[in-house]
Image 1 (cartoon, helix red, strand yellow):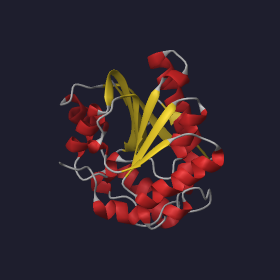
Image 2 (cartoon, rainbow, N blue to C red; image 1 turned 30 degrees about the horizontal axis):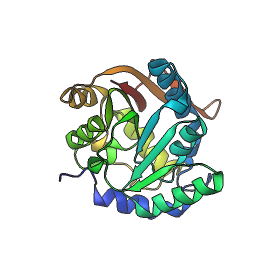
Image 3 (cartoon, helix red, strand yellow; image 1 turned 90 degrees about the vertical axis):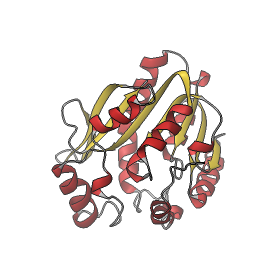
Image 4 (cartoon, rainbow, N blue to C red; image 1 turned 120 degrees about the vertical axis):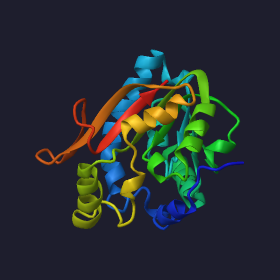
Length: 233
């Protein structure tokens, strides 16, 4: 079976798995991003389904230590999180237990799943996979017939290289050096082209920007030049 897993990427993130829930540790940027990402995700799901989260089954691909999975579970959804990093999955299970949340965590590749979900979430993961086409095929196979796919990634632009790598990894040290590879960043048009092969298409693309004056991340309908979130169906 073809896999979406890039072993080098998994090894890089596994080195810091114990610190997934350390808000000032190596995953600090994701902790800062999470409230804004969850605002977007919640709005998209409510718009698509217009019903109670308790009626939804959601898959979080590349769930890591469970930051997004826990937030979704707290909204009432039935959540499954999957990641190839075994240590991250153990951290996620342990933290969910402490938080009193019932989340189904799986260590493995989304390609191996034989179940469909109402919503598939894949945040900051497509720029780390071994093959985008295989990954998009896996996402599609996990979606219900009328399901929703929500993704986030980095655009491949000069600005994303300056801010997403040089500034974030070398100057501000928000992320460990080597976390990102610029030529693996994905333009929205490229992501849409890959998705089209599997009969899904974007209907919303929203930028994610950092406002230095407020020292916080914000959503933007106009600026997709660094990070962006995309909803497909």
